[in-house]
Image (cartoon, rainbow, N blue to C red; front, side, top):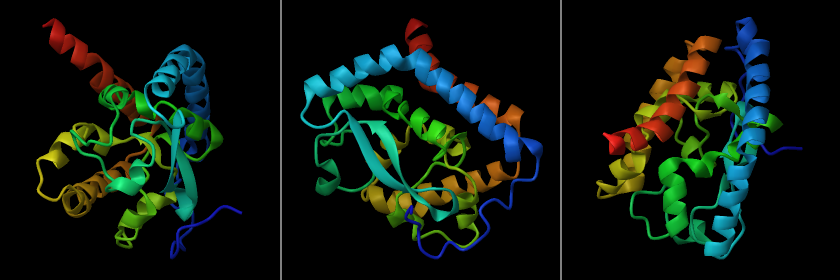
Length: 226
């Protein structure tokens, strides 16, 4: 039986009102994620080799996150930090964090470390679009209203991820990055996620997926070309 986060006692999906939310979103998730894994498999293989050959430790990094209905699941990423980094610093990462490997900096800058989460989507732990999942330690601080984000599958991207795409630089400028994340950034993200839940539809999800791809991968190269 899967572990659950304590004190989450609401119905799992009170927000699933439309046909898309009940059925179409999952179809979109599985089809797009499976296709993505197939097309990106050569890139993922190359990245996995880079991770394995340049630092000690496993290729994949797994961490417990709180998902839909308070269910604990293990999110999957390409490892971007040195082995045992979780025990040698905070749960968040800021720019110039010494725990990040040289290859990991490239992966994090291009967001390539997030690509294995497509498998989390196929498995049903996550959605392509939805509130980003947090570690249990931070979910403990959620108010009753904020825990509404736990009524849906967490996502790989969401509006807050786009606004805070340079989050590591923002945190690096703070005297206490973890406190700033918990008290300012996380609150702001949750407000944006709650607003997203009021506007879920296929066109909005597709827009966010395309916008995420454009912001993360394209502008860096266009800017250099210009």
